[in-house]
Structures are given as structure tokens and as C-alpha cells.
Length: 325
Length: 68
Image (cartoon, rainbow over all chains, first blue to last red; front, side):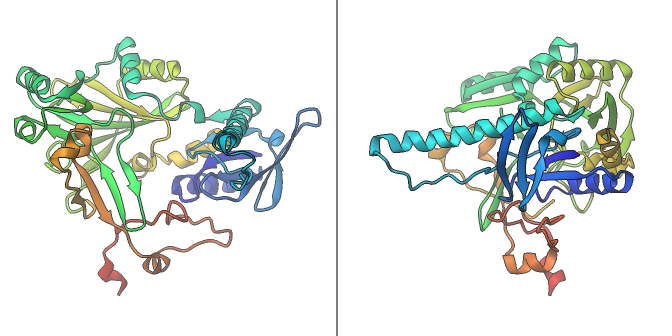
């Protein structure tokens, strides 16, 4: 059995499963963490039974030969009764304990699938590495990285701008990606220069800043099975996309072409991935005006269809091939 | 680029936020009625494309006039 952790609306997962269905008769269990259709049944190591049900059909996770952690959070494996109120002082603690039991069981399922499967791609346990740690690791392995600061006041920021020129700012963790019934909210990487500084308060929440790099183009590369599939994105000549290509210009889209990374960059990226224990992920790089490759970040669960389609890499098929035992 | 509007952050709030949060954009979401015209749901309700979850609507990324 091939087990895939994902979310119900991830089109990439669907495409990979379509490839799997066309290539093998091995059953595929897709676990969508956003749907409440998976329930815990039983774990019995002696009987080699780790049973969960999906839409009331029972699956034994001991049958897993291949596992792909594509994305997704925790499953609601069993109902938590919020009506339990044995004693007021105990209630909050007991509820929190039930949730933590549920989380631990979730962790165990994912770890079990990783360990039990002969083939394991991606991991829930390093799906969101700390950006600043990753930059340090990249530097340790000889990759150039942007000059980075964390600053909480206007004076220090002004000093850095006078020293280095324009900066960019982005989230230390993940950017904003929030939804409610009426609106969705997003944030991007933003430019910070003298004009922007004028509108800043003297003191603000500690923020990540990096020296703006004069880029020739950007590179997004997808890593799987120690191979890199890269795409050059010519985003620098469009004011809308020059700081963050995700501010897509629908009328004049950025030109995207297949690209081959130099071997010395590939070798360094493999060392970074190795230290982070990643066997897949999407890496963002910038090539500056001096042809230097500058590492920005690595996203273990990043989208790769945006590289696959424009470059005809058929990455969804490559992921399927990797998953077939 | 999707049609996006910028959230206005007050000077008071700016003091409590990291600088990247000064530029937050928002999109209006489409109604469930329109969404159902746009996306097909499979028998096991595993939609290929559609809302992220039952409680998370999708944003207005397709020109509405095409639907009329």
C-alpha cells in the first residue's frame, strides 16, 4: 500500500495519484487531514495491526510499503467530548490533556508510516524549518546568503539603509495566509527604503530585514531523489514582481524557462538538505548581477507544479515513480 | 495578479507588528453559490480544485462576468 498525507484540495497530490493508478495496481491510501473522515481503530504491535478507517473502510498501516508526506496537519482521530466537567479546576487541564493525547497519536502515526515504509518521501517533522537556522546551515556549507538583520527600531533600520542601500522585509516564520468567510489575507516580501522608513514608528515588533539583491533572475528548484529540477524566473524587470514574484502579473507574466544549476551549487544544496534531513523540497535562489547564486530558503512542502508545468519536467510522474516500491 | 486591496494598519497598531505586516493584502471571497458553479465535487467529496476546507471559502480569482 502507498500512503499519502495531504489535503483534499491539493491538485498536485491528485495528479501524482493519477500517475500511480496508471503505473501500478498497488492500492493508494490518501489521507486528507482537512476532512474528518479518518478515525483511529486499533494499534496492536503483537498482531501487527495498526488500523485506521477512512469513510468507514479499514486500512492496516502495517501494509504501508511507501509513504509520502505531501502536507497537512493533525487528524481528528477520535471525538473529544468537551462536555466532561468533573471538577472546574480540572476541566481546562483535562481538555488540554485530551488534545495532547490526540497530537501524540498523530505524531506516532506519521513516524510509524515513515519508519515502516521502505520508501519515504518528505516528513511531517521537518516540514517547516526555521528560516534563520536554514540560512546559517546554508552558509556553513558554503552558499552565499543575503545579509540579514533583525531590527526593532527605526534608528537602527535607517543606519542599515544608509550603509547597505535598500532592504527587503519578510516574515521570520511563514507569511500571512489567512481566510475567513468574506476575505482572504496575504503578505509578501516587501521593499524597505528611505520612503518607507518615513511611515514607520520609532519602535516596532522585531522584524527580519535583508539587503536587497540586484538580481539577474530567480531560480526555483525542486529536489527529489538527489536530483534538481530548476526553473529560472525573469521577475526583475517587472516592478510588480521584482521584489516578490508571487505578486503575479497576469497581463504580463514573468518568463519562466528550464534551468540547470551548476554542479557546485547542487553539491552544496544536497549538503544543506542532508543536514535538514530532507529528501525533497523546493529551494529559492537568486542569481545576482555578478552571477553569484544566493540561497534564500528551502520549503520542504512547497508547490512544484509551478516548476513542472512551464518546464515540462513531469515532476508529478517522477514523484509517482519514486513512490512505487 | 489577483485583485488585491491593502489593509490599512493604524499607526498605533504598527508599533505592535513586525514591518512585513504593514503590507497585508486582502481579496473578497466568492459565495458558495458561485463556487458550486465553478467546481465539481467527486462522489467521495474529494474535490480536485475547490475550497481548502468546509469552512474556508475560496477567493475571487476568476472574473465574475464570465459566469453570467
